[in-house]
Amino acid sequence: MFVLGMTYIHKDIFDEFVYTPEDGDARDEDADAEPRHTVFEVSMPTLLECLSVFGSAGGKSAPGDKAKNKNKQQYRGWRKASNQSDNDSDGDHGGRSGRSGNSSGRIEQYLGGNEKGIGMRMAYGGVGYPLTLLMAEDADGPTATCEVTTYEADPVLDLPFDSDATVLKIILKSSWLHDALSELHSSSCEKLTIVANPPPPPGRAANHNAPPRLRLMATGPFGTTEMDYPSDKEVLESCECDTHISFTYKMLFIAEAIRALQSSMKTSLRIDEGGLLSLQLMMPSVGPRGKTPDAFIEFRCLSIDEST
Image (cartoon, rainbow, N blue to C red):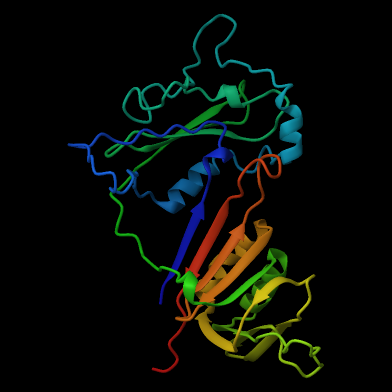
């Protein structure tokens, strides 16, 4: 039984993104060779603790406010009027020289006087170097530099989803799924069964006794709870299911997506014929709508083999 969590972040979400592949012993001239990429591993609890170093101060600004204030930013340096350095740049932290591109590497260029929030510059210099986070609430305030130890990455868990063998595909508002899973998880349920049914035959309206398009059925020590989703565009934006299906998952793993659901806007719920569940969560865009690609968080979970 496995669960896999992934996030897809486009470079447009960053104010600046520079990536320089590490130099290999010899360049592969094969045109069909896989593109170079960098893989390393860090401790998730440590990384989260570093990102929370300033606590909850400086809440998020709305995307519209950010665009509105962009032209009014007054960039303020970190050096005092006496031209004495506060030594707030990261210096040699973050890896080999020259790997940060043409950027000055300083964070103040992203900290305008009219914006609130915590600015961050993340840098990784390659194998053997730490992941360096340089953070500040504003250009004149205190800064924090965190160096997170990196490790050679373990083999990545591979749970390939077979899109050609999809038996269920649903798009719905994340709030609907979040509320349901939160309620089921709080009732100490151990298993979650996802049941879906095809639409009524063409020309025949659904009657009161027709099976629901989507049913979430949770089983726990105190019994079974069922939640039905009607065939309503206000609830299920789209639902593609050609035959009756039923797959069961461990609630402990499904619950890993609850917190991300709370922050997302829409959810694409897919199941392939092998029972592999894919939850793709569309996160709010940080830039003008339609101009900045949406970021996604995806969870994949294997179903329980109840035949054994």
